[in-house]
Image 1 (cartoon, rainbow, N blue to C red):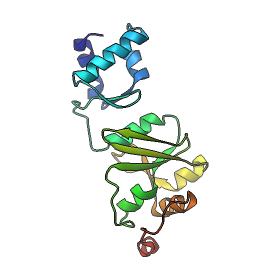
Image 2 (cartoon, rainbow, N blue to C red):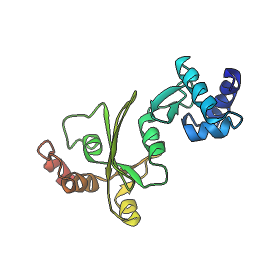
Image 3 (cartoon, one colour):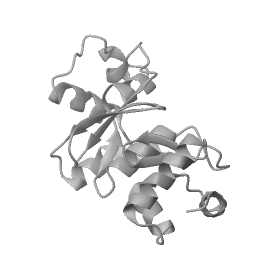
Image 4 (cartoon, helix red, strand yellow):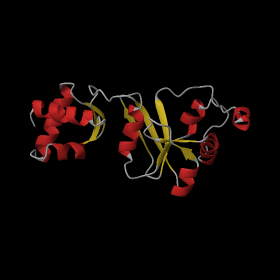
Length: 179
């Protein structure tokens, strides 16, 4: 793929509000490239700074006008496409003020997909598997306009933290009771 073609394609997707791509997405955009040529092209685009490799097979167009503060959540959503995912555990309890320490470099996500930890230039994404039903997940989470992932309610985040056996000593239970 030529750099000029890549820039045109990325700008077109940026106008649609999209700036995070899987390698599979990019292979569809540049269908003329065979797998080896695509890999080499992506390496060149990363080296030139046109794309940022967030983690294996995930690329970010940081020059996009649609680039926003929820990049790490968008990457998490892309990594577990086709699964129920929601921000929970320490990330949400911190947002609710129930934990005094703010996890700056880590996003904790519950998922119906497999567990795993991914280091990205935007922070660490920690997926924890849940066997909860889709109905239970939808009832225990809410949508915030502009955020790519659903977020756990205070009750759900606290329940998740206890259920997976995480350290609960930093949680101010009085704040949870008064909510």
